[in-house]
Length: 74
Image 1: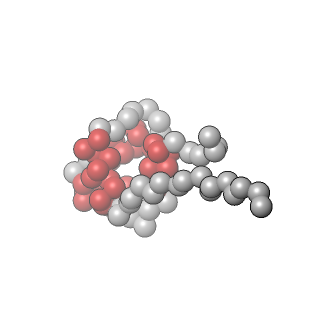
Image 2 (image 1 turned 90 degrees about the vertical axis):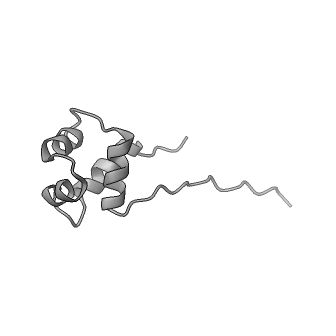
């Protein structure tokens, strides 16, 4: 398995690198700033509903990366 980041780590990165501040994300999603901070700092997790809200707010999507097919020799 390739050495990829966990989805939770990718979501933390998306929050930290967003064009929106955590305050703005909080305002648009209804998630408290404290809740976002606890998640980003690894102190707490998020519910699926909360993940969905953040995903919509930041316009995120999951993209599946399929391994390259091995070519058979000629």
